[in-house]
Amino acid sequence: MKHSATSSEPAAVPHARAAWPLSESTLTYFPDARFETDRDLVAGVVSRRPGFCRPGLRRPEGFAVAPSVEPTPAHVPVLLDRCVELLAPALTARAADGSGAVLVDATLGAAGHAERFLSEFAGLRVVGLDTDPEALAIAAARLSRFGERVSLVHTRYDGFDRALGESGLAAGDSVDGVLFDLGVSSMQLDRVDRGFSYSKDAPLDMRMNAASGLSAADILNTYDRARLADILRRFGEERFASRIAGYIVDRRARSPFSRTGELVEVLYEAIPAATRRTGGHPAKRTFQALRIAVNAELDSLTAALPQALSALRPGGRIVVMAYQSLEDRIVKTTFAAATVSRTPAGLPVELPGYEPLFAAVTRGAERADAAEIERNPRSAPVRLRAIQRATPSSHGEDS
Image (tube, rainbow, N blue to C red; front, side, top):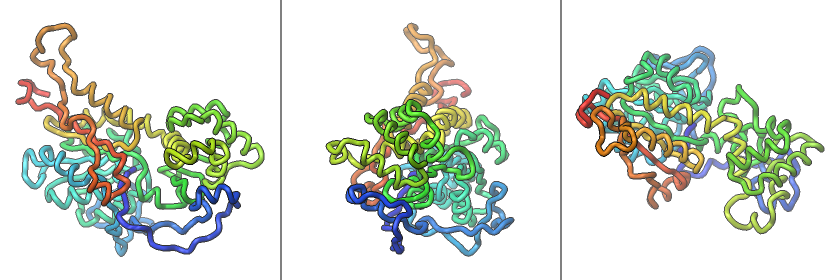
């Protein structure tokens, strides 16, 4: 899962009338819901020839890579230079070219960040994780020239320890850098058929891994009103959660949900007109909430961060980029706990051997500057935080 951006408009494709005939009032407010498009190919398309693998590239079973297809350069990773700047000291602690160092990209996506690190540090090894099979196939093609320096693992990031094991690494003290770029990726947003975007009519899926778990349509069609409202309130911070849930239940009684356009129409009816005219797209919070619920994103993040911290060697660093307050709150809380002194409360001095295991690298959350946002609009909401594992010399004991 990767929240990177595309630097240019998607290639023009013929528009077709949406399969669901939305009302004209809905189409007026959500003009893009009138159409559905073919798949956006901005991140590159990979054919699925069974059994094919680039020589030297370690990839999970079942992923095929087309040798003739390379991802396009339109994929623009968020805060790429800053990520390199923050992680470089840890990756080059033993050798200037990163030899002997390991970076885990826990949200590989289209591999924009991973490619930059592999290119900049000729001795670096990268372990890439992603739950989306299509993203892994694209990443495998993009990174194939780096051969044995790349290992790809098909897993959510809460499978961090397992991914290390499959890559021949220990769960503790084996990694020099970790990168999390949370949320849904531009590649997934721009692939209309995945159902992540409220601006196009598409199947109501929203699964990062389309082969597992409940889809957004399953949730909308089976959860009761109270449970739906709870999802919208907790994961979308939607103040009209109960009202929207009621409209959803009423609508599905007539016909089950199957497409994003149908949900957009219900949201248009449920959210008061005064609210629709202000404060951004009224479907944003509902779509966010459903995506988080479908993919168990917050639970996965909560489980993954402690694993990542334990994997770091002394001097290792972790960088996390979050795009909404719920994710950032988990990161902030976890990092705060990791950087606090272990000396029992109330003592006037810090006891030797009880110093914090980690130290903050950034002051609070860093944001994208105006130049970054102009170049990469989807970086606007990013909050970046980084911490470093203490070294023996920094507090006088083995970490």
